[in-house]
Length: 151
Image (cartoon, rainbow, N blue to C red; front, side):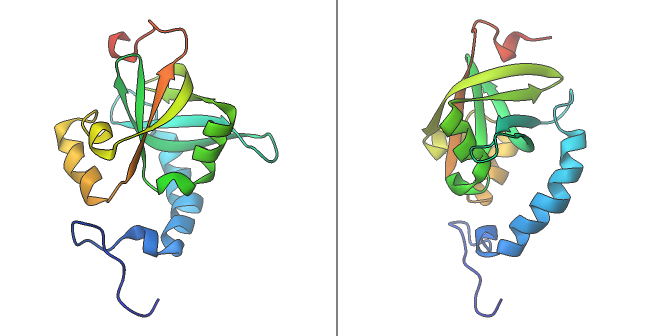
């Protein structure tokens, strides 16, 4: 990895500069996180989507927060990731958030600052420092089943 690592706007090394980091996350970290995501605590959820190429159901842990009638999802690896492309191609996905299932539709990229304000104050700083450039807004199908009013 010779040379100076790319940095985000906060001066931290950009993890996008290290393809090894993505590989470790995909094959190790995500395998652990999938077991603790979607529970009653925290802001990690499980996103289920159907692959574009093989048509197989895939699941990935993500950071999500409910907003009126839907959810905002942080695209921690930008929009070039397969799960994002699958969600856009299918115009839908399913989300397990705080032990409740939601069918999400109408994926839409939203401004990074608009998206980050959906998250609690204590997460905003971390999301900004990570250099997240994109957030995804999706509607809950059959609204008014609003995640903000779920038990």
